[in-house]
Length: 241
Image 1 (cartoon, one colour):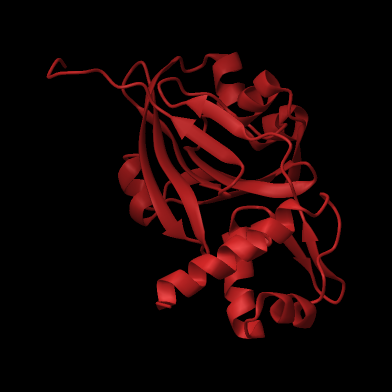
Image 2 (cartoon, one colour):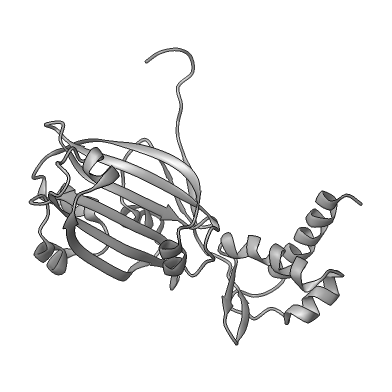
């Protein structure tokens, strides 16, 4: 049997075990699982990582590996810019705000370039974790020029979405957003926040939000845990612009 066929067989076997296990229940120990599937523990761990990345397994050091069956996923089209909170509300999925870090810093590199700021200009950076079903599923970072949003406003009103605050304030009025979508390896800081391993694959949106005056007012990175998100886009047929 080829290496690919072996991997597929192991994956299917582990998938069947996970499907037959109730959400929140602990899987058998690694030695027992490896024996049951007829593989080495090293091979088993590689297969298990695939399901961890999909959000279907959660390892707790010294306790064991637990099965997670997401009851719902974030689903929506990309034609309209919506916050995760809005998407969650539409499908009735409770979400909460995890660890938040708000700080001012000097603009440099791609931040200065994309926000069209002189290097050294002050910007406000807001990093936070979004939880669904008590599990971290997204890590979001927004960087805004000084004066667009005060740190005090975040302390009073923040529930996780910078976008929703800007829409509600309508100052400045928003016009559009450009978004680049990539599959990336999780940076160390993001991996720690999402309880995954460094360099595990994540879906990443890199976005620029523009005002009606054409000013770039928010440069953001959004990292999403596979398995909890399903995005789609409606596309036209033909060559019309």
